[in-house]
Length: 149
Image 1 (tube, rainbow, N blue to C red):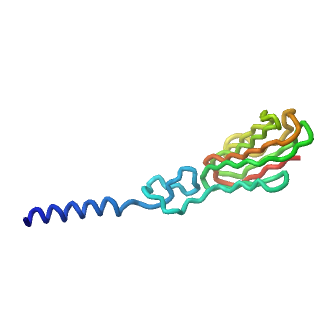
Image 2 (image 1 turned 180 degrees about the horizontal axis):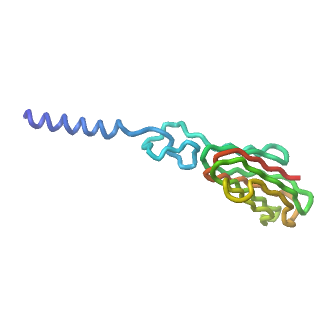
Image 3 (image 1 turned 90 degrees about the vertical axis):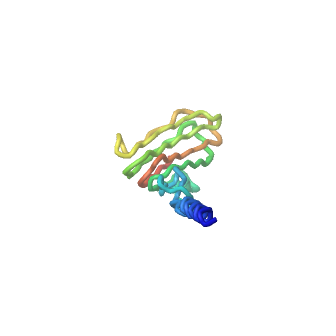
């Protein structure tokens, strides 16, 4: 009886040890503060910020996470002037714009530490009407902005 009691206590201690020692942290790989060692999410995840604004410009910031955001706007001309820039230590910033027919007229990516850290130009010609701008950040650490003219 004593031996069975000790075995039960041993199993209970091991079981408690395995369930209560789970490291807590952010378990979302898209978060700024993802912790690959965390086994249980503790609700502390933070994400990159994409401020698309109410006008023709926006800004971004992140600390290692990934995110995407879109907004629509009315475009009365068949082309669109644009610019974008980053001040980042890691990751990429993609700016994609589609016209009223869903045709891609801008698709530009800036990557931290590789190539230019700013870009500008004029979109391809598109159909006027409601256009959609999409900003995507991937593993992004830094700040940046974009604007349309």
